[in-house]
Image (tube, rainbow, N blue to C red; front, side, top):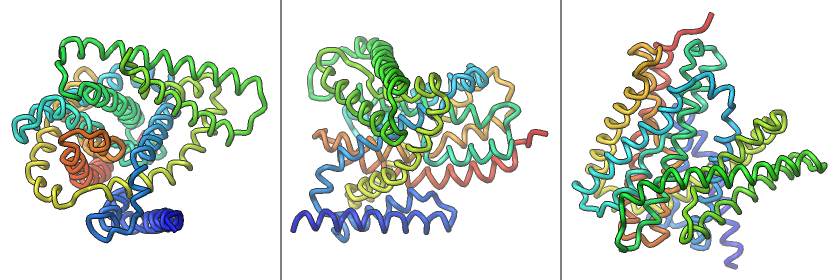
Length: 399
């Protein structure tokens, strides 16, 4: 009987999730926002239509969705693109994120009274920009050759993909520091580049092995896609297992897998990327509906005002970070403002990692999740509208 309840819950999530997404897109709002609202409505705090067994494994489902996000990001970055957009994209990939994350950390510490480690988790949950909102819009500008002469959509696409990995990695470091033990903050900060380097190394090893496997054995593309996904999950689990011995930013390695396969086998990389786009349709519904279902709406409502204040402070810091990253570029002031607007939306990463502190037993886990959801609801439509309206006005079509 319980098995039937699980199947019923999955059917409800998929059917209503697709419907909610379509309805929100009809009114020019991001479809993921519809899924999130649906999750809140059918979750345990309102209609309670989702079987608890689904909610119990939602953390694992979110982890798989996060891995799919990072693989898609890796398969979307070309070395040629990185060379073309140059230092601006590199700076956009970490400066705005780090400035916003640290600003939110201090704001949450002083406004909410959170300990610095928990405030740091919140800071880097909030900091990541949302590819789910801005990537389709940037691809639309590229197809219409708008802003492509200066590579503006490419700068945003590339910067946003790496921005997410930076945010997730630093969040993971704060999560690892949690537990009430004495922390050497200087040593923790110094370990970040080592964790990145080890993550890249592990990702390279897995990618090289996969490239060898695909070149020497006849495997269908669908099977290759599943092998890549399974390998990325194992890499993430290996990183978790080694965390107490030697910290590894395994999620960076996950993105490296996609990047290396695309560089070594471009045709296969493009085909696998299409496969992951299709898998993402299913994963996205589960991710956003289940995140919505976990939100305590009463807690979220009670912290809505202070949450929006903290998020706004963070966005101001991020905007300064974007402007700082673009100093010395050939972009004019209007184009820089467009880049600032494009870096506003929050959604995908907040949904993927916002519930992890709660699942790990972090004292302020419910609060972190609630503010992550407030960030999605507040910034996703704001950023989507801003990019659409201001982009049409500012980005010049290439002749």
